[in-house]
Image (tube, rainbow, N blue to C red):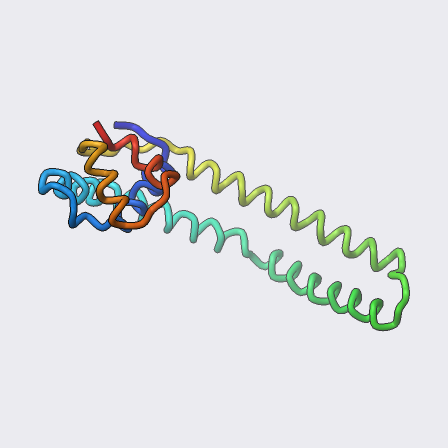
Length: 153
């Protein structure tokens, strides 16, 4: 079955948190097989996210972080001195905000691309009633049940 990466990752995380003691043996086996099938997708996704973050936090990012600290100090001093910030100080803050907005947008695009990528997973469907038993035992919300609905018959 082909699914979006983020759907597989969310399912893996939700399955991992389930208490399966009240499920039938058949359903427990299905959960175990699904964990086994979804684990590589989840691990690859987490690694990719980590690599994207590391890539985005380059030398330019470090320089901008330093500029942020300096700008925060300027703001603090202006407040302490009870004075308005100068046009140059405001311009500096504006440039920093613009840079970080673009940086953030680029990161979000990478993350979205990773999340939306389709992957093939071999899942074993199990009865919805069995899923509900596990969720009751695990004190999970219906929102979390929805993340796993695609695994049920």
